[in-house]
Image 1 (tube, rainbow, N blue to C red):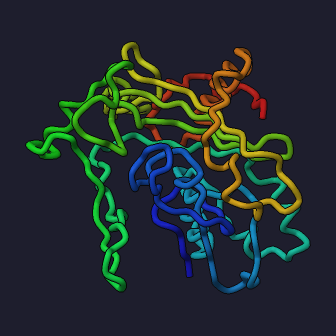
Image 2 (image 1 turned 60 degrees about the vertical axis):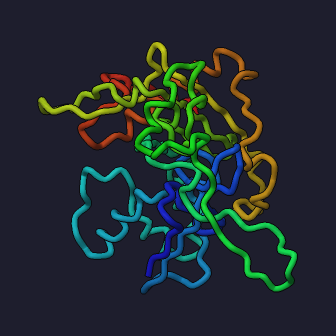
Length: 303
C-alpha cells in the first residue's frame, strides 16, 4: 500500500505538506520550489516493511517506480532517475543508518510552467463570521483578475514578460509562464541544509532544447535569457540536529522568507550555479538537454 501527498516532488515519510494558503502572496497552488510544495508525506506498507520504520534519507517520487519494479522482480529501467527504496524499507533497524549514509544528499527538483493556474486554483477561501450563530462556513475560489470583462484566455497577453513588467498584468497567476520556470537543488548532509533555486523567464520557456540522439527538439531550457525576468534564491533550513527530521515544520527557516542569495559572496554564488548545473547534468537520464550539459558532467561535486 502506497500513500503520497498530491503530486509533490520530494517525498519524505515524516512531514506534513499542503497547498499554499497565501504564503509569499500566492494563492492555493503547489508548483513552486518551497518546502510547502516539495516536502511531502510518503507512506508505504507491505511484506517485509517493519511497522514504524522511519527513513531520514533524502527520497523523492522518482524513487517510487524503481521501488515497485524491484518489488515485482523486474530489471531496472535505465531511464529512471531514482533508486529503489526497498533496501531502506526492509533492512533491519541496525542497518538502516548505514544504508542511509550511502544515499543521495542532494536532489534536483525542476518545473516548467503550464501557465493555466490562477488565484482561483482551489476553493479554499473561507466566508467571514456570520451574524447568525451556526451558519455553515462557505468555501470559495479567490479572485483571479482585476478586469471584470476578462476571460482567462485574455490573461497571457496581459502578462508582461520582461524584468520590469512581470506581475503587472490584469490576472493573478500562481503559475506564470513569465516567471515560474525553475530548477532547484535541495542539499541536506552533515554540513549543509539548504535549497538553491534559479528561476527563468518566458523566453527560456519557449526556447528550443536539444534532444540528444535525434533530430527532434523540445521546448524549455534552464537559462536566463536576455530580457527575461530571472532570479536566484538561497534558503538555509538550519542545523541538522539529533531529532531531525522531526523538528517543527513551523520554524522560521522552513518558511522560505529569508533569501540569502544577495548577501552571499560572489564566489559562492558562482559555485552554487556550477553545482546546480553539475547536479542536473550528472543525474539526467532522458535525451532532452535543458542546460546544454556537454562535457560538464565530469566536474567534482563541492557539496
